[in-house]
Image (tube, rainbow, N blue to C red; front, side):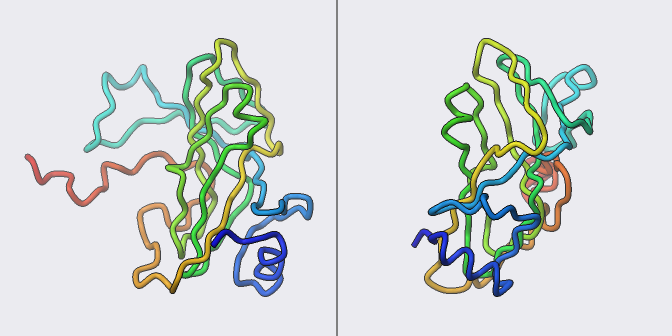
Length: 181
C-alpha cells in the first residue's frame, strides 16, 4: 500500500519515519520530494582502464553549489535529506517528471530497504545532447513509501547503512567477490 500525505505527516510527527531536513511543501499527495545536495562523485576514468566489479572504483569528489553534467555523461549525487525507515516500510526513489522531461535520468537502484538510515545516493545520467546545469537545493527526486505486510525479519544492515554525502559503489565488497578466482 502506497502511503498518502496524511499518513506520511503522521508518521513523521510520531518519529516513526525520519526525513531531515523536511520542508512542508516537500510532502506531496503520495510522496516526499527530495532536494539535490552539494556533494558529487565522478568516476576517474583517467586513472582506470576498466571498471571491475571486484576492485574499488576511483572517484573524484566535488563539493559545489552547482554542477554541469555534460551530454551523455554520468555522475553520482546525494539528496540533502537524511532518512530513517522503520522495519515495516520501504521506499521507491523516482525522478520528478519535470526533470525527466529535460533528459536527466535519476536512479538509486530504485529502491530503499526497510531499516535503511542515511542520505540517498543518486545515479544521474544526462541522456540529452546538451549539458545540464544543476543547482544544490533544487527538488530532484521523490520518495514513494510502501507499507509492508509485516516487519522485515532482516532489516537493512548492508554496506551503505548510515551513508552521508554521495557514496560510490561498494560492489567490490559483495560476498561473491573472490569466489571465482
